[in-house]
Image (cartoon, rainbow, N blue to C red; front, top):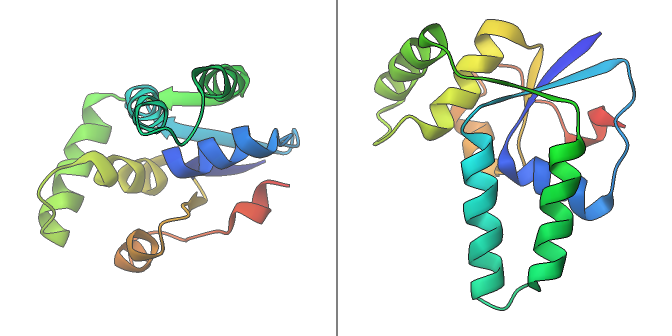
Amino acid sequence: MTKYVIGPDVALRLAHEEAVIPDEHQVLAPALLRSQLLALLYQAVRSGEMTKKDAERQLNYVRGLRIRLLGDRVLQAVAWKVADQLGWPDTFDAEYVALTQLQADAFITLDVELAHAVKDLVRIAPIEALS
């Protein structure tokens, strides 16, 4: 079983495409994924990029995915170190990197800059790896 950490951008793309993740993959994310998704969808509705109905549909889709959400002390401590090492102003993205380091085979993000920044710390996989 291949374990992938996904960012909120990937979760939203999966929801938009209503993708089905094969059983041979396990999807992981920090517990903060829930709050980030809610915020991103709320912003999209407020800006007129999507309807509230579409946002609720995407949120319900993501809630239905088999995503193991984690957020323990060890993850937070490693995230702190990653953020400090990379000179980041917060630990949000660092939690995804830390979780990949601790429990996954690769990190999937659509953010090219983030992928480039962490490529020496974790393996980066394309979203197509989930299909």
